[in-house]
Amino acid sequence: MKINLKCFADLAERHDCDYREATEINASEGATVANVIRDNGIAERDVKIIFVNGVLASNDRRLGDGDRVTLVPSTGGM
Image (tube, rainbow, N blue to C red; front, top):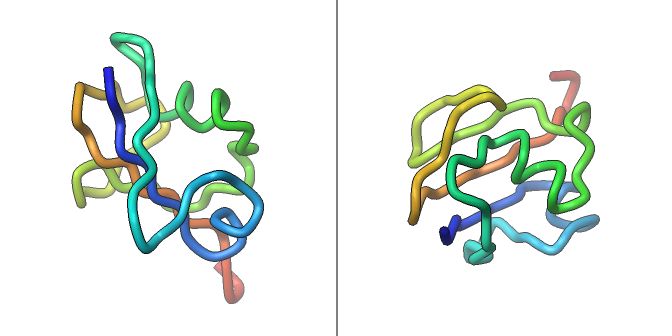
Protein backbone atom coordinates (compact mmCIF):
# COMPACT_ATOMS: atom_id res chain seq x y z
CA MET A 1 0.00 0.00 0.00
CA LYS A 2 1.07 3.60 -0.52
CA ILE A 3 1.60 5.99 2.40
CA ASN A 4 2.38 9.71 2.11
CA LEU A 5 5.08 10.68 4.61
CA LYS A 6 6.00 14.20 5.76
CA CYS A 7 8.78 15.06 8.20
CA PHE A 8 9.48 18.37 9.90
CA ALA A 9 12.58 20.17 11.25
CA ASP A 10 15.67 18.02 11.69
CA LEU A 11 13.80 14.83 10.69
CA ALA A 12 13.42 16.34 7.22
CA GLU A 13 17.10 17.28 7.16
CA ARG A 14 18.29 13.80 8.18
CA HIS A 15 15.83 11.56 6.31
CA ASP A 16 14.28 11.17 2.89
CA CYS A 17 11.05 13.02 3.65
CA ASP A 18 10.14 16.69 3.73
CA TYR A 19 7.43 18.98 5.07
CA ARG A 20 6.81 20.84 1.80
CA GLU A 21 5.66 17.84 -0.19
CA ALA A 22 4.84 14.35 1.02
CA THR A 23 7.08 11.48 0.00
CA GLU A 24 5.12 8.50 -1.28
CA ILE A 25 6.42 5.29 0.28
CA ASN A 26 5.43 1.64 0.13
CA ALA A 27 4.28 -0.05 3.32
CA SER A 28 3.04 -3.57 3.92
CA GLU A 29 -0.65 -4.16 4.41
CA GLY A 30 -1.54 -3.67 8.08
CA ALA A 31 1.58 -1.61 8.82
CA THR A 32 1.60 0.70 11.83
CA VAL A 33 3.17 4.13 12.19
CA ALA A 34 6.01 2.43 14.13
CA ASN A 35 6.67 0.16 11.12
CA VAL A 36 6.86 3.17 8.79
CA ILE A 37 9.19 5.02 11.17
CA ARG A 38 11.52 2.04 11.56
CA ASP A 39 11.44 1.04 7.87
CA ASN A 40 12.52 4.57 6.91
CA GLY A 41 15.52 4.60 9.25
CA ILE A 42 14.03 7.05 11.75
CA ALA A 43 14.60 6.43 15.46
CA GLU A 44 11.27 6.35 17.35
CA ARG A 45 12.86 8.38 20.15
CA ASP A 46 13.38 11.23 17.64
CA VAL A 47 9.64 11.53 16.92
CA LYS A 48 7.63 13.58 19.43
CA ILE A 49 4.31 14.14 17.61
CA ILE A 50 2.56 11.98 15.01
CA PHE A 51 -0.40 12.93 12.84
CA VAL A 52 -2.28 10.54 10.58
CA ASN A 53 -4.54 12.31 8.10
CA GLY A 54 -4.26 15.49 10.18
CA VAL A 55 -5.32 13.85 13.46
CA LEU A 56 -2.99 13.25 16.43
CA ALA A 57 -2.03 9.56 16.55
CA SER A 58 0.26 7.13 18.34
CA ASN A 59 2.94 4.92 16.83
CA ASP A 60 0.73 1.81 17.15
CA ARG A 61 -1.91 3.29 14.79
CA ARG A 62 -2.65 0.94 11.88
CA LEU A 63 -2.42 2.58 8.49
CA GLY A 64 -4.46 2.23 5.33
CA ASP A 65 -3.69 2.83 1.69
CA GLY A 66 -3.30 6.55 0.96
CA ASP A 67 -2.92 7.65 4.59
CA ARG A 68 -0.89 10.79 5.27
CA VAL A 69 1.64 10.39 8.11
CA THR A 70 3.32 13.49 9.51
CA LEU A 71 6.25 13.21 11.93
CA VAL A 72 7.39 16.06 14.16
CA PRO A 73 10.54 15.88 16.29
CA SER A 74 11.02 17.30 19.74
CA THR A 75 11.99 20.94 19.27
CA GLY A 76 12.26 24.06 21.37
CA GLY A 77 12.16 22.26 24.71
CA MET A 78 9.27 19.92 23.84
